[in-house]
Image 1: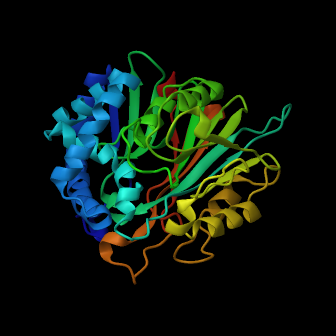
Image 2: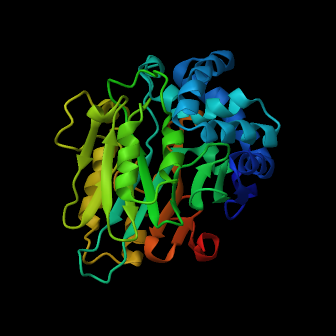
Length: 375
């Protein structure tokens, strides 16, 4: 693993184009060293959290290939091509793309370890008739090995919108936006229904959402898939439309909507929809989540939140180190330490992203404009 003083100032950009196979091969080739680091790290992480050795992880991953192919064969082609480009086994790439299903399933929770927090996400929605742009963003909290694996993936597809995603190397997608004006932020969740049953993995669903052109299309996609894990999807569009969608494993009957308050959508890592009526394991696994949500609510107002104020809020240290701006806890084992590994703001109106390449109180935001990529 790269020592802190040797890490790059900014996460590397991976630029790919073509069909799923062409993009995957080039992604794998450009991000090869980071993909190798990711696979190596997750070998230890899965053993630590789930007590699974790599042969069991690969066996588990095999069960997801058929559901992914039925959902969209191009996504399985992309995964296999990433492996080819990186010179690793295809099941190793599938395995890291189902890391949520392994770590957040009931089987993984048998290890009786708390889970690392994931994200603090928001969208500021301008009312009809307003000239204010929609702003979407999140702090992404995860295990600290990801400082050495994140990339900015810029993809131009032969069919479908171009997209950008800030993502762990080798995974299909995380948060991002596309040339159709759609933006995506997300939070991992855990319920009593998360048992690791094969279906559409979380990170495949995120990738598929970035192929959508409208918020309603993304909502229909999420409902129509047989999902394998719980997650929150905050989907917005430059036209001002936005939805916050809490989804549990299963079909459309296990989808809940969280409504905006004062033109603001907020979400952390627990269920907040009033229609949710199952067991929220998230609160047990990530007890900092309601604290972060309260701080977001106190700090964000749709009619008075400038980008500068948002950046200040995303560096908030209330409940430190498990704050909105998360820092490693020195009392934790090294493998268990988490931090805000990236902070992202997106102004969908003009395809602009601001990215802090690491903990936002320590790293400046750099402005990235993708209008040329999306042209």
